[in-house]
Image 1 (cartoon, helix red, strand yellow):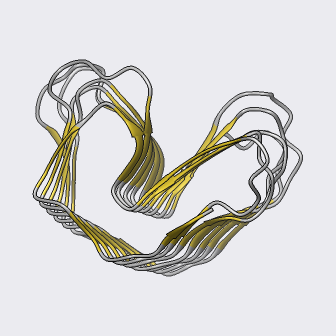
Image 2 (spheres, helix red, strand yellow):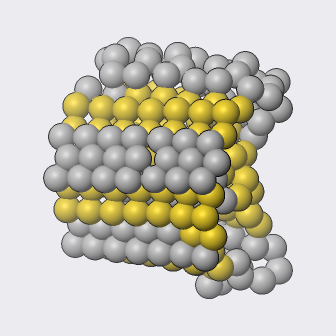
Image 3 (cartoon, helix red, strand yellow):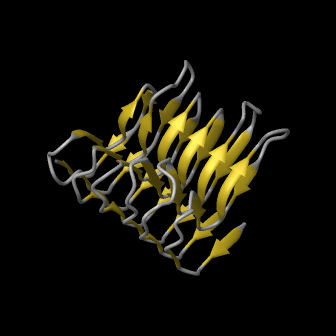
Amino acid sequence: GCHNYAPFTISHPKIRCLGGIGGGVAAKTMPVTITDCHNHGALTVDVEPQYATAVNYAGIVGLFYGYGVDNSTVTGCTNNGAIVDKMTGTGDHNVAGIIGHLQFGVKISSCTNNARIESDQAVGRAVLGGIVGHALHNNTIEECTNNGDIAILNSAKTKIAAGIIAYDEKTNNGASVTDCVNNGSISAGSTAGDSYVSGIAAYARWTIKGCTNNGAVSL
């Protein structure tokens, strides 16, 4: 287990990945296990990026690549630090309590986000999730809880927000959300641009089983 108590305030134009515990993790040759890690520090990103590409930040890990290696896991982790996205730029903003951007067969279980997550930028696509922001390819989320409010405040090109998993554009068979709970409010601010908002999964081709939403959802 590990803990971060320090706040992060980022104004560097080359920022791509940021996490309270790890910026980027890659399981290229063997499984990666992240267990009992906790972030208590606030994360604030307020900068004009140098690159027009995706940025990924979260309370635990900004970017997690499973690379098809089986059995990578994130278990028993908690985010208690507020996350504020004020970065401009035309790329995706993948922001979440636990993992900002997740790829290739990772299992997330028994994780909790307790903090508010918000985006206040009007250019790129805002993708905000209580547990995971953007995911690709057959990941699973089990017994996770979001207690924090999720809010997109400004007129981003596309707004995608959810209590558990916000967005998954390329999932094959096998991705699932099971026995998860959202207690936070979910909102997408302005009605300009496309909006996908949900208590559990906003835009995702996942199997959803045994999940509960207790939070208000609004546009």
